[in-house]
Amino acid sequence: MGYRLAMATRRAGATAVVRTRSWRLFRGVLAMLVFALPVVLLGLAVRQQFEPLISADNAASRAATGFSVRHGLVPALTVIQLVSQPIFVYIVATAVAVWVWTSKKLKGRALWAFVTMMVGWGIGGISKPITQRARPVVDGPVPHAQGYSFPSGHTLNITLAAAVLVFLLWPLLSATQRRIAVVLAIVVPVLVGLDRLFIGAHFPSDILAGHILGLGIMFASWIGFIGKTASISSPGPSHPA
Image (cartoon, rainbow, N blue to C red; front, top):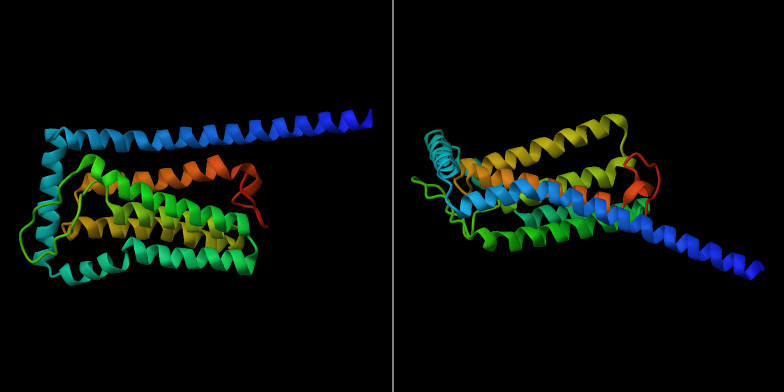
């Protein structure tokens, strides 16, 4: 009798775990769809050469790059472009994740952060050939970026990495440090996005799509695979579902 009761309890527990994980996965997919919708609509507008969007993008790109050239901003913008390359961003972010894993023993949280960033990096890479948008054509001594333009890889990856690091480090930060981290996670991606526009590497819609997609990947991953057991306010280690 005791054996049957134990087995029934185990089966019930296993069923509850499966249902919980399925619900989390469903929520994660739903969150990703919500964030992906505006990116898909922008991509379709670009592919179909929707005139109002194309005209606005071209006008903004010409105005921004013209301003940069006239005011001698290109050298500074080039430095920002260099240091914000995804490879450098993820080297730093991975080092932080390793530190959180080894020194703070938040193994589940660190693993979630690393996997999410690598998956997001891959998604950004495979999304560009889908739209196949050419880079802006600008005049003046502005460095010409290679590859397709939509979405902005720099913007997507810095947005994703910044958001992931905030969630990764949240339990380790004081109230003041949390506010600073949130501000930095907003300001730094915005500055990188502006750099991509003013250096002539991307159109505004590319940059907007990068921001949205980066945030979408982070939130979908957090909601779908972490769940309530790893609340951002948790003071201790958390483990993926």
